[in-house]
Image (cartoon, rainbow, N blue to C red; front, side):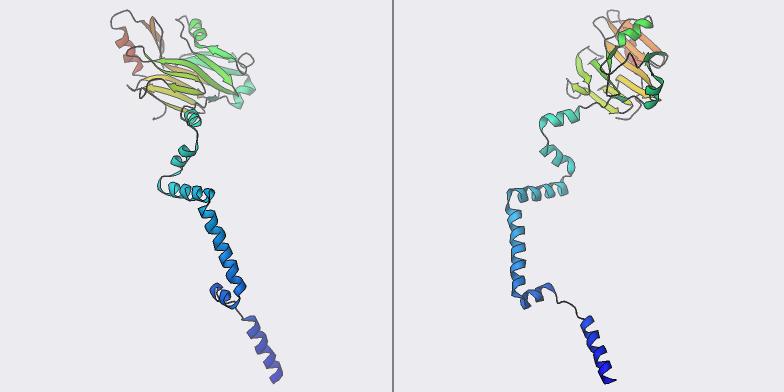
Length: 258
């Protein structure tokens, strides 16, 4: 009986054994000291290496300034320019592709259907074609289809003095004059406003296949305005024509706050 209880006590004491803390192990087993020193040496070596210094600086910058600052530091000037001036283009829906048509409207009242078999990849629709069909004078602006998105080629002139302040070249918008334009872009919208808050261009895609064009366009002789009531134009040489055009332009509202 005593032998059996003795065995039980031995097995219990064996199972209840716990390893001592790491620093005690290092004292008991000298070989562990070398392992700890080697690990620390490798860590210190990495921290002092160029890669380690860059990592530490990146961590500190992300902590104090955030990811945007780091992104700007490590991204080339050219790539930052592309990002800052990128236009997504209006995404043509699967519904439009399946039906084979896309509607393009000047203002909120005049729409024309274009078969997608004619509006192919890389093809253009000139806005003057729309205006001519509606019996008005032409404006110079292209709609381009690329990768099932609709992009724009357009030159934006300032309503107060006709000066060129911006150029839209498909997937990029170039701000020719600083602090004269702001814009918003997503899969269904491209909107540009001048520093007076006037909507210079609004291109929106609803239901995935209906494109609506609003804004103002300036030629050598005329000011053209597309608003929700339709399309109007003024001869710039006539007194008061610019003020009349601006009054109509003020009624065009942005679909997004920007």
